[in-house]
Amino acid sequence: KSNTFRTTQYASGIQTALPYQYAKEQSQQALEEQLNHETGDRRLDGSDLLETAAAYKDIAALVMERDERRRRWKEVEGVLPKISGPSIKIGRAATMEELLNDVKRWGIWPGDTELMTVERGVVLAAVSAKQKKQSIFPWMQDTNSEEMVVVGKWSATPLFDE
Image (tube, rainbow, N blue to C red; front, top):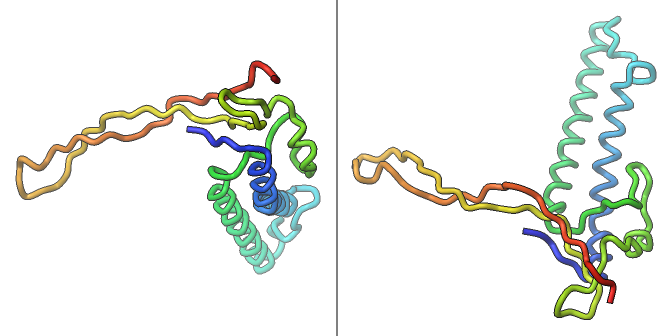
């Protein structure tokens, strides 16, 4: 299972994904700044019980915000292009030109003439799962079902630039 994008689809997807990634990273950074022992929220030192309780409330709100932004990121992460690669560094916004010029990402795939990228994917296997169901009829107790399980990851790289 893997996503494949042409250059126009990729550029549009990246523009859609960037705000989600930025929000996720900013919320994590804000939480880490407040929890930093040297420069963070001094109310967490515990010198005043009421101030410490208020600080715990503020930290809990930051954790909830971070988790919500991560959840939103996870929703779009599976369908939009991945924002990663040798030119991408955490904390620095990549330009669209850098993403589109990443030569390890793009190639002409068999049967097509336009540049495409195949993102890293996962290998799934169908596993038979035997489950016991509660039923009043004894012959309906055992059920066999197939479940898709991730067994590995893969990536594709074009061999030729022609």
